[in-house]
Length: 460
Ligand code: G3I
Image: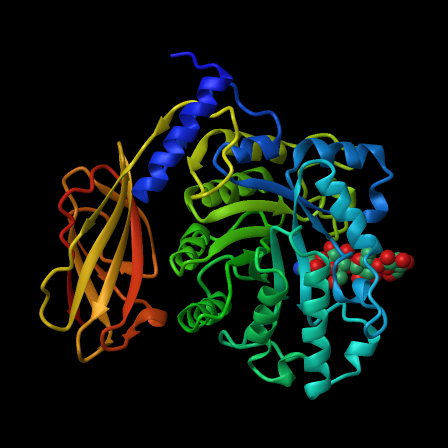
């Protein structure tokens, strides 16, 4: 059936509404007339595609032409950072940040704010502070900047790069960290109070797979969610060479399962497999319904902070590279839609899903398991909730029965015994302990049917 752009838009909207009503994941596949820009292609699934830009380059017409044409989310590469916005204590200057903001808003684009607190790019006066004086200066900075931009920012990187590399998932030492471990939550609370409508993100690098650093952040986010500390999203910078690790999507999905959005915030990829790497990252985001968008860290290779590595989508003359085409094709191939996202108008075929929830099994008394399914013709995503009995758990196993012809293609927050038939799902380190009456979630996705998974839980 040939659909006009108007009827396509309507079909997409109706499907989205239906999917929202069912709490289901909507899979968008294929397009009648593929979108021709990154932003429009991403919008088909309710996502954005953005770039970090520099105020000093806005006079370059090649640069600004690409920015205006291709991207629908903008990040200031440096202009909203502490050293740029508060050069003297309580002396705020939003000249550069406002130029970026206005460039974006005047051209119908949204803005990611970057970054309220970071151990780098602090003004000299702040670097010389410590203790309660630094804490109050930092919180004042968050409050003032978030208030200035109130109502105009889609998401703020409230705290950037606070976890250490090679420290078993612990925090990075910094003047901010030395004000007390609660500095991150204090910053998030201040940002929420100043701009209640901005999504509040934690942003970091070297978090692209399941590793000690990403797990440290995962545990912080889980703790924040359990205590009501306002956090809405986690940014994965994704400064990569050749491509992401094999468990990139799994890692995104385990964060999403905590109830936060995930965003690729500073993507650039060096190396000979660049085009494939970009496609892999794009597909991973598209497969995770709470991955709301991708931002590349610069426009042309000559704009990149990674001098000489040519890690971006446009060459130094502003020409589209193979990496650009691989991203555009991946976006046009479709994926899950973002719940409450902003679908574009050129989507064609949609497959709505049904969501079913299996009640908890009676279990052995140690724990129970229930499964929530987002299933469509030919595939599914299963989210399994493990709830501890009155004794709590220090290790658990959930057994599922996959129908014949079904194959598991990925999983998160668990380790599976196989991919077909009867599969035993075991805890991983970070979700081994579950307190009495408390729950944890893991998930898997697969091709084929998902009837009768019948999860049963036992302590291990
Ligand atoms: O604007 C001044 C210029 O006036 C001066 O002549 C020149 C001399 O050094 O410096 C210029 O400022 C530089 C600025 O970029 C703008 O080009 C700074 O020295 C330089 O330190 C700064 O680098 C930025 C870097 O963050 C700072 O750590 C990069 O542009 C920016 O891409 C990079 O972005 C970070 C993210 O914020 C966080 N994640 C990692 C990412 C890459 O490092």
